[in-house]
Image (cartoon, rainbow, N blue to C red; front, side, top):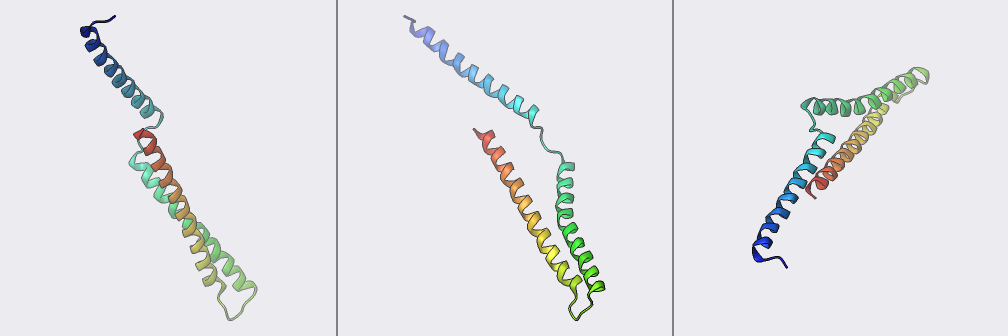
Length: 112
C-alpha cells in the first residue's frame, strides 16, 4: 500500500502529463490548420465581390440582348440588372453565412 508521500507525488505527475498532452494537441492542431493570413481575407472579399458582380453582369448582358432582339416599352436590361444583383447578393450572403458557421464550428472544437 503506498504511503501518503507517494500519493502527493503522483497527483502533480498526472497533472503535468495532462498539461503536456494538451500542449501537444494544440501544436498538432496549429500545424494542421495554420492561422489565416491577411491576404486570405482580401481574397475572400474579392471572391464575395465577384459572386455579386458576375450574376449582375450576366443579367445586364441578357437584358441588352433581349432589348435588341425584342424591342418594347420595357427595358429588359434594367429589370435583369436588378434580378442579377439580387441573385448575386443572396449568393454572397449564403456563402458568408456558411463561412461564419464553419469558423464558429472550428472555434468550438478548439474550446473542447
